[in-house]
Length: 100
Image (cartoon, rainbow, N blue to C red; front, side, top):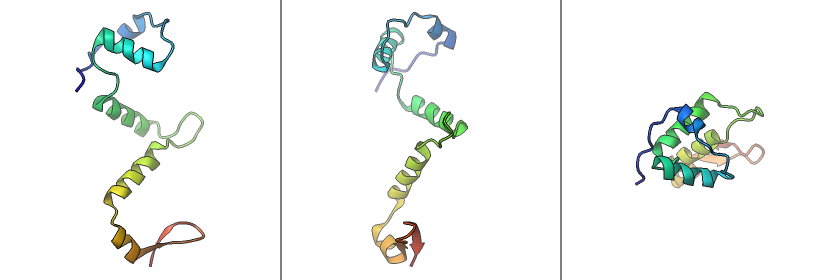
């Protein structure tokens, strides 16, 4: 388990000289060395999900793929193959799941 990330005001991060950083991996390594902990973890994931919920569409107008991926994950987790086969079929024209 990683150490908790320190709570620095955003301006403290902005005030630091990051000009030598050339990649995301290098930034994360430097951040961990200076501030301790990791950039990513449960808190980071929750913040990313909040952002995706607030900004459903990307700058180009496309919907963020996380919602389709999350729906697929929940559907797979809750699926029961035998029940699906006996109660539903796939429409060959639309590929939609339809009752038998």
